[in-house]
Length: 130
Image 1 (tube, rainbow, N blue to C red):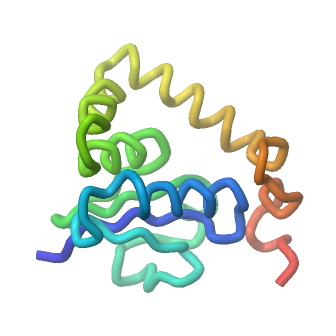
Image 2 (cartoon, rainbow, N blue to C red; image 1 turned 135 degrees about the horizontal axis):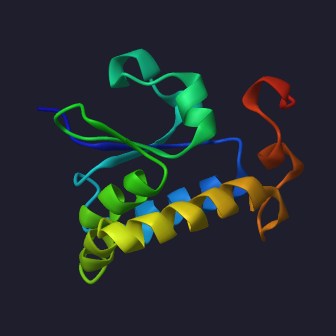
């Protein structure tokens, strides 16, 4: 069984900063789950497409099950160190799950405006400078 993988958009400044936070602060141990930019990942092996990864954060569980957006955030928190695990469980509660989806979509639409965001964050992957 492979370990879980959190897949983010490596072209996005916000995503990259948050991935560093996950890597250095959220995981209890580096072996808990991998964190990688989709641009560096073997997407076919993970069962993902560039379109999925460009649209939202992805979590590929050890069983191969894929979770996206706020569900990926919840899975990552559930696999993180205490005291963050209860937050992951809270994000799965029906009312909170809906609210998490609204917040996730707002952040995704506005990531280029947030601290650390870049103009590339607002462009679809196919239009970003290489």
